[in-house]
Length: 411
Ligand code: GAP
Image (cartoon, rainbow, N blue to C red; front, side, top):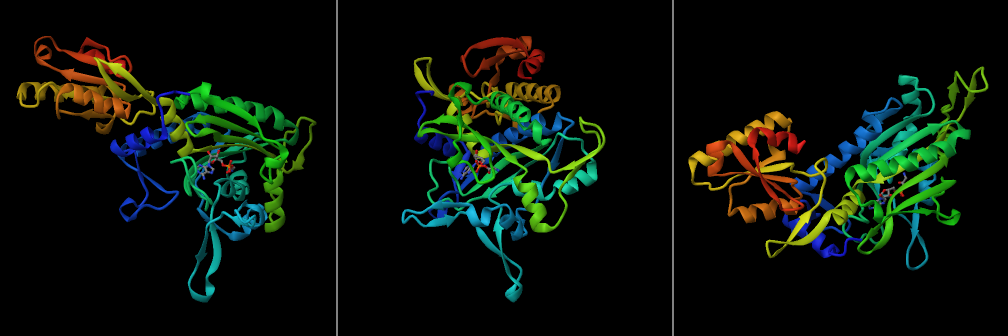
């Protein structure tokens, strides 16, 4: 693990630079909740976009879903969560960690739950998806959304929270194909880890023994990450068999089987598909990414901190500075440079920031701390030869580049 990093440093940077704040902070906080600020939200959106493009947008075999967070409570009875989604209290008594709420008014009110995993919404929409799109097996349904768990001991910043966001896929396969699909998703998880920029050297697979597996799983691999507080689960890959579809079919009375019109043995075949489930936590991804990216070094005789984020996840892609803010010619030229960068890159104003505040060194430090890969300074020489200073975040190296050539360096 990156030896500079501690949780205190990450939490402090996140607050100072507008990434993540304690939930309801002015009231003393609420344990297990965190609020994403401007840059944290941009980072989160970038991560979700990468995941969605990789696993849904760029594939023919995937369908998206955005199901309701509050579901008919019978769904959680059928899935086994009402009976078994529990953790032991110190007294040894089991405590169900699903959040309860009530739906409806007065005497009509019934107890319902906030979903503890997004997977539930996927299983209850299996039939809808099959009826609407007639997908051929294997195919998957993907969903990104909030999930809630009344964790007994929330801790370690974003690691164990009570309100989190998950990115989940239920991938439906012919029963005899589960191992092949499990292997494919195992590799796919690394493609995602690499794409967001989590350090691969810090990721380890744990074959979860039977006694530790969720009630629905016949095989689970936990992908663990070396967090500063220890090696802990980052995401999971589970073989859920036909447990969920069969349980929902039985409890709801709805046929959730699949008619394969082109099975390998010929003819037609009706059966309940089996499921491979790669499951990712958005918040844990962000924490692992921050731990991977956090770097301290010495530059120009001073210690500095920067986030080594790749350009796809970085909240800000570049920042443009006029050397001095009281020189109208410099400011006008810098605005022109920024406008042409916006046009050439297609990025929005938020992605190419303007900063004319304080000396250039301070502006570099601010951008370093939020992980901006490049800074562009417009100075007096720019007015003569249309070159700017392009400064690289990681090396701190500066070079003169013709302003029209900068855009291609950012992409
Ligand atoms: N549908 C399968 C499922 O929910 P899980 O291992 O309980 O499996 C999946 O959760 C992922 O959700 C975890 O790998 C983790 O990234 C994230 N996660 C679960 N509980 C969490 C919590 N309390 N705080 C933050 N993330 C959590």
